[in-house]
Length: 205
Figure 1 (cartoon, rainbow, N blue to C red):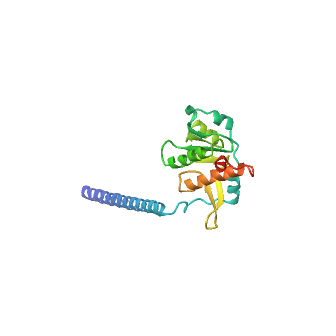
Figure 2 (figure 1 turned 120 degrees about the horizontal axis):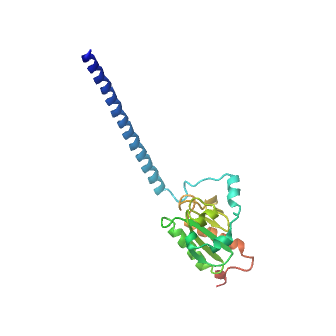
Figure 3 (figure 1 turned 90 degrees about the vertical axis):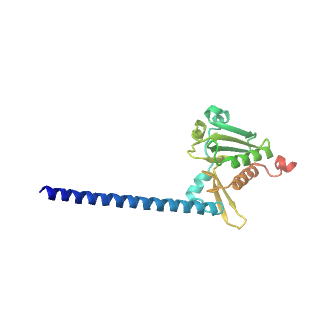
């Protein structure tokens, strides 16, 4: 009996050891496949043209995103650095942009575009850069990085190839939007807010 008991124990232990080795091997293969897939996806994203994988909005979603948001502009305009204001550019009420961004990161070029627009259209374009996760960002209602231009966070236009495209100013650039589209959206908003025949200060030289 002791011999049979010892043999049975060895068999059970051997089976357990084989199962552990098999599980470890499966986990290693699964992790390798996951890493390989992620690296492939990153490579595809790196080599793809800007906006190639952007989201598509349904007509209802597009209508909702195109409706100006109700913002507490009085509070936002008086907000301080402690409440989440990173910077302010320009002045005026023709085009008001709220940029909700993380500190540092990949939004530097976009903020520079907005700064240039505010400088180019002095007295007409003003920008407030707000820290993601701050009180000011929560007042706007964005839980991720985003840009709101005159209360709207999307821009629909006709591209050079004749296709109708929509930029969704949420998340990182080159996903659902580009810096060029951000600039175009500001210019379009300014044009829409300028009475016919008046022109902008830059147009008047």
